[in-house]
Image (cartoon, rainbow, N blue to C red; front, side, top):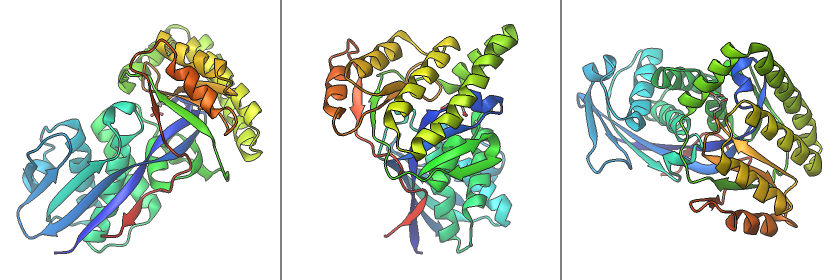
Amino acid sequence: MEGYTASAPGKLMIFGEHAVLYGYPCIVTAVDLRMRVGVKLNSGPSVEVKTDISPEPFILSREQIERRVDVPKEVSFVIVAVRRFWEHFNLAFGAEITTKSEFTYSYGLGSSSAVTVATIRALASAAKVEISKDTIFRLAYESVKEVQRGDASGFDVAAAVYGGLLYYVSGGSTIREIRSDSLPLVVCYSGTKASTVELVGKVRQLHRDRPMYVDEIMTEIGEIVNSGEAALLAADYPQLGRLMKRNQNLLAGLGVSTDVLDTLVDSALVGSAYGAKLSGAGGGDCIIAVSTAENRVATVDSLMSADVPNAKILEVATLAEGVRIEPN
Ligand code: MEV
């Protein structure tokens, strides 16, 4: 039987992390590191999932998929996506599913959302059903929320589906493209994997303890997002940088930055970046810095001479294309 491969991009949060969970907008770009998912249907009774995390495939019966059997997280995104796809289209089938990642799970670049989105896109082609991007978004967002069992705005799912640069409100109530020709970022992995669930919980706790303090910060972040959209549309990199610095200070005020992230942000600024901030939940993962062709080398050199032994520059292009079917 014919096989289909779909791929979906990772993401970087530009402005608005955490605040997006409190009703404010955020801005996200898709990046050109992609998750690939191949799907081949068969007439067998099970779904076989091959991943980079294990040499052995995970073989699951329809009954195991329907009753949400326990599997490693990386596999559960695929399995839950299959079940949601079956439910939506009133189908069930045997299949061989293979996932391949161009980036590690530890960078915090949205591999879980990307694999979920690519799975649904490849399933639709293999099952010969029409599917719109909006339906892919809905099914993938429901799947990701189910696996993560926590707060999730879905901004990473939107980046994986639609690609480019997006203005996004939680749950997908607004998903709007910001037209931009270039977004020159230096991306540096901090060497530490962060737990989004833990950091979101930490900010929720702070909100319970000091609601006015946190609400004020969230309101300011919301304003930065709106000014950020204007700066992005105007390709005004000095202004973009200033806004990133402000957003970083506010995130530090929420307690989600770390010494390592602060050191990397400072080093990027010493290396004449226009601005820099953590990207994502904080606690680790990546920082982003606005650096154009003229100051990129200085920014990279400064980051690499920072006292952060496991820091690593990630060569990623922004404004990547959303989910797509790949030629076989
Ligand atoms: C994590 O990458 C960003 C958060 O805003 C969570 C979310 O939006 O789902 C902290």
